[in-house]
Image (tube, rainbow, N blue to C red; front, side, top):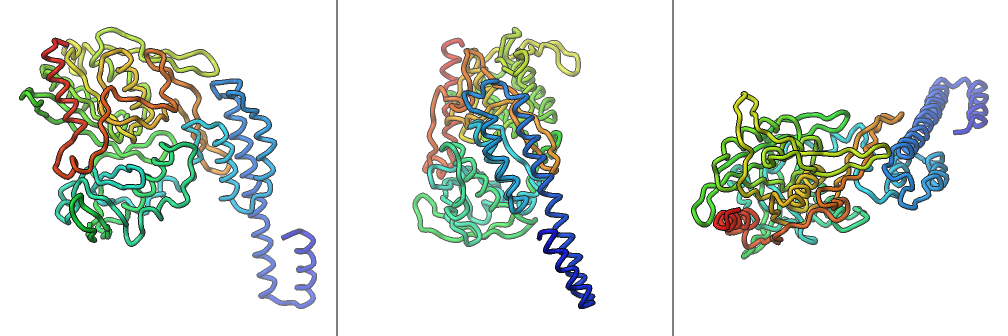
Length: 442
């Protein structure tokens, strides 16, 4: 509402002496001030985001992109935005012009993006337009859910409707965004029942009611990012030849898993092979790769180089020859297998690529996400959080993970039939290789 229009309305109200209308005037004036306030904040946020990236982007040439021209094109859209949401869309468009991962706008409600803290206790992956159940916990199994099933609908909504508005720059990013929408639909309040329409490998579609449960694991925060759930598992596994191997799996690279990883490696130190399961691990603290790789590398070998606007940063393995309790040990010298899939990202990709490039580990599974840029965050004037990459990482062997991701040494496709019979094809391929490596003396 313009100032002239407000003045005319005030004159009219004074003549009419209408208390109710006067209240309407006050509300309109307040709305006008609020609109001016959020718009000023939105413009300041756009300017801050542009300037921050302009000052820190690791490639001063922006890969040929005219970053100043992008600002001149998009800033007027923020000035003309009709709502805070519209202004955020313009900032997201600004970030998208870079065509790189780890440039994201997080709103203050990002931590509340899920409709509730509980979820149907299953894991799912996408294969094309199919949503496939890959893992089921006991509480979900009791309701009739099982690995290998296709999920056709959640709470009455066909899965295709969940991602109808998803737009992405490439297929793997599109599948990630689709998976996020499905994951969101599986969440809700504690004990809230979800109705899933599923189709088994060899049966007809049917509906199953499954209660949403709180997931296990500790929640941690990193700066102003939404809380991250930390899950860890170390378990025994048997190779086809009957050898005892160890499997170490964790959900995110954060400090709470550092000690459990050390203890697990020590537990498996005499085993003929160790498997590190990074499937579904979306990343975390990049510096942790130096310590974790040091459990398997006896020399401070170069894991990779982070190129920044300033000097390059070198990441080297930190050989772990002394444990937290002071005991001296030899680093693990046996075969190491790493499991990855389409939800393996960021720090997990960097670690897997480094170990692969050094010839210290063999990679099994499916091609990773290809989103591996080191990133930091900054709070904008609006209160939103800018996640932005401040470096590019080249792993051992000179390979950049960004874009292409990690290509497994042994690709193992997603198989509904294998899942339905209770098989873990990727893990089984890794265990089979451990037998081969032991026989070859590697």
